[in-house]
Image 1 (cartoon, one colour):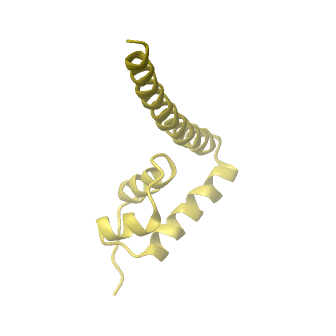
Image 2 (image 1 turned 180 degrees about the horizontal axis):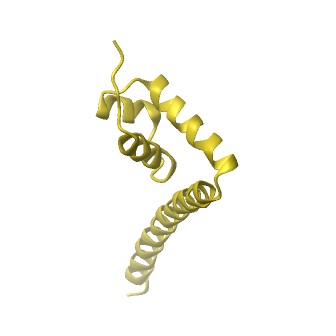
Length: 94
């Protein structure tokens, strides 16, 4: 017997995948939903984006958000590395 999920719940799952980069497997385990259902919801959302300008704008925003989060993580790693290098060289000068 299949479960019925509200549209808001489906959108939440799709958003977590597209905007936060969460894997389908992790979402399925966390929310007790089949991977196939989540894949179907994502595909349906992408199809909706083809005909609905508002959905397309929302999708583009989610993709941009995900990319910016990735860039932020990378820049934070680089910044931490540079701080450690600066501390190392400061010790060498003394």
